[in-house]
Length: 73
Image (cartoon, rainbow, N blue to C red):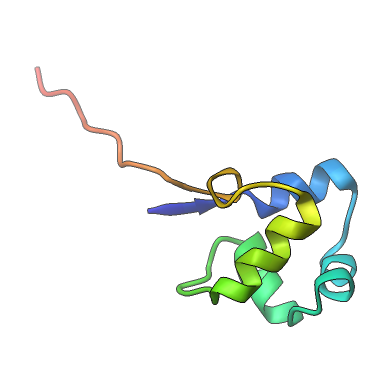
């Protein structure tokens, strides 16, 4: 599963979805899907816009979350 940390970045900057949309030119629905971690695909220019806005790297914005293994007795 790919985790998106957009909500964390937005919280640090105290930005709303509309603020991010205005500053990046991205569609609100794209930002909402990333914020809620329901996006199934994202265009590279959208990722670039978000990284530029938050001055971060792609790896800061996204991470691969591996499922936890259950230990069997």
